[in-house]
Amino acid sequence: MPVIRTADIESHQMHGSTFTPLVRPATGSAELCVWRLEIAPGIQGVAHRIHREEAFVLLEGSLTLTIQGESTTLTPGDAAVAPAGSTIRLDNPAAAPAVVMVTAAVGFTGELPDGTIVNPPWVN
Image (cartoon, rainbow, N blue to C red; front, side, top):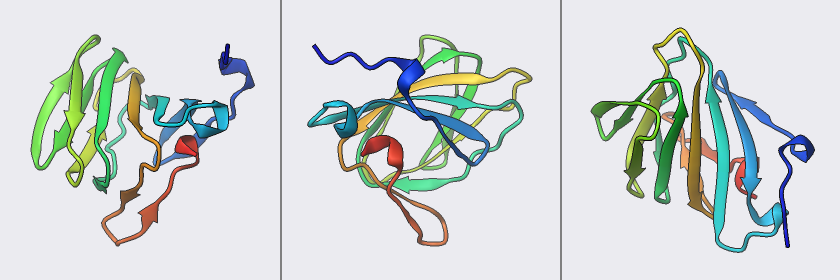
């Protein structure tokens, strides 16, 4: 049985957030990627277009999620789905970290406002 231990995983830093890959091809998954995302307090995220569907479940803190210009606040236990091709941004205006579990399909990529394609290491 493949078990992924958080203690054995290398986290990645990007735009004031910490990405901890859990389920991905490098850990035995053929179709799904799951990562833990910790967004530091006071962070305004970077808007980016996602090429595949992405799902979010807020575990701790508070988070403002913007999808295609429409913003909502998530509280622990809330979930949201961003459709493929949408532009998203995650902000943490609170004084405490926000912790989100994120799921996407293998092969997930995003595009920054300057056209840079991001192929994140936490989905490979």
